[in-house]
Length: 201
Image (cartoon, rainbow, N blue to C red; front, side, top):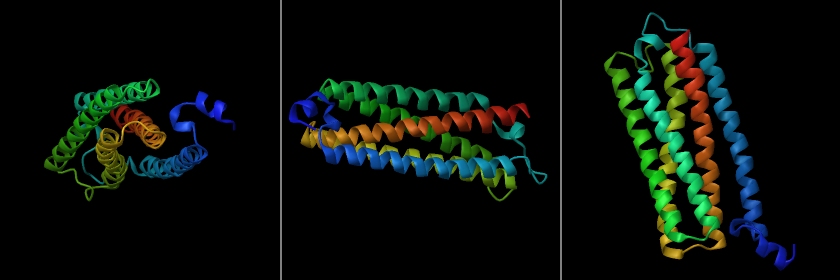
């Protein structure tokens, strides 16, 4: 690709190495899809095996789940604005919207931990039934990914403030955006197939 053609591309796509790294991350997300598809399948099989313990209707608090959903989906929006600001090469805008994304993700994680503590106080632990084992593994895996994302965002903000916006930091920001949007998509499936379906059935 010519230098003029490269210059017309977004900053994160202007080098062959960056394009290969982004492609590699898409492949990684494909593996993540397989992981979560497996966990959803396990939950689909075990979700009705309560072993005399609490059911979904007994423990789910839809208000708290709605707040979690609002926080995480809003963080996807703020992440999108961070990428928009990156395309405008507005460093202050990138950092501001990344910090907002980080805070919203932290709020989501706080609500999820509080939810898990509530379940344990209600006697609903991962050892209580097959339903709860599969539930905690699925949501715990997603929560772990969000925790990793929060740590990643902190390091990314530090690097942006230290090195500025370069093709390398732009690529890292773009890849983080892909990761964060992926977590939001997974949460939509959790919200639909775990919480909403669990309260209806």
